[in-house]
Image (cartoon, rainbow, N blue to C red; front, top):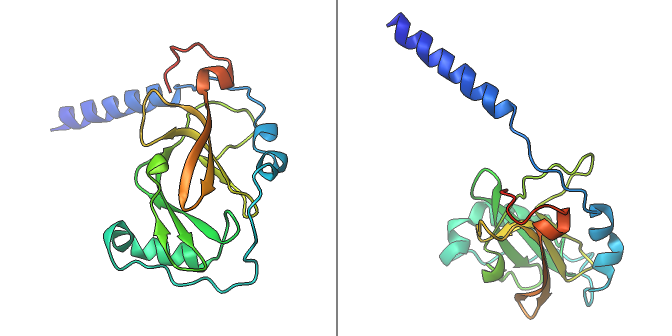
Length: 187
């Protein structure tokens, strides 16, 4: 029995040591410029609901019902995107969030198909911390840094515009181009 326990502990020590030495590719993209207020200002939200009391989100059916607690909790905080909408992050994996968008005026909850989920892009950005989902209250622009809908070959930066209850892809910059890395780089 002691031999099995000793072997198990040794295997765990080796596994944790090899994992600790794992490094991520360096990405020297100018994230502070790419995610600046100037970038978001190009897509201004029409009107702002700064002083409204958010409507209760409609979570009576479908995916909204399944995630009703987190949707209610986040929607209660008020708009954080495109004037009167709230982007809601729903945990659905270690480096992944599922995305819902609640309208603070009507309570309608959207699950946008182009971005059902967003996964981190595992790169070394130095001192700059990047988020998967980047947005501002006064802009219709959503920038995803990573990949959407768990596409293993789709890492990079996605630029979406929120319009008429839908996200529309404006541009995609592959991670290899963004970070100046070989196309064969695995994330």
